Image (cartoon, rainbow, N blue to C red; front, top):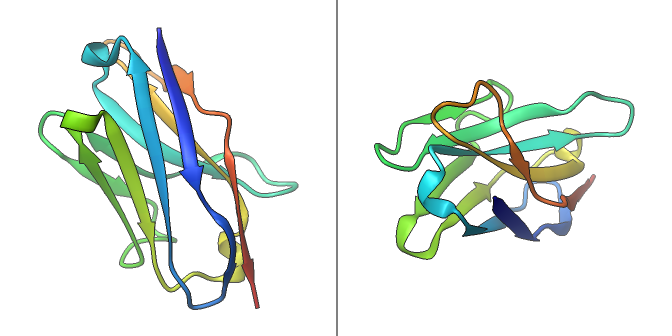
Length: 119
């Protein structure tokens, strides 16, 4: 099992920046990729960004390209999401997730952290 704990977020003004952190514990050696998802009220959960832990290959949703950066610190088993030029539409609960190589979907989820961008 893998446990994920997010931190960061909170209330940010439009145009501002914030950083989310996700610390993994447990069977971290089994993790192939980690990602950030978000869910706004009334919307489905959507992927924001993901990174593979070995090669560092990244993926970003079109809506955040050029504004968000995902990075990882393998020594600390931690993944970060640096968010810049935040918009009110970025307001959501952000979830950290992890998956093994053999998995077809993300298996492990954090509890979520609220990011609110005020206009």
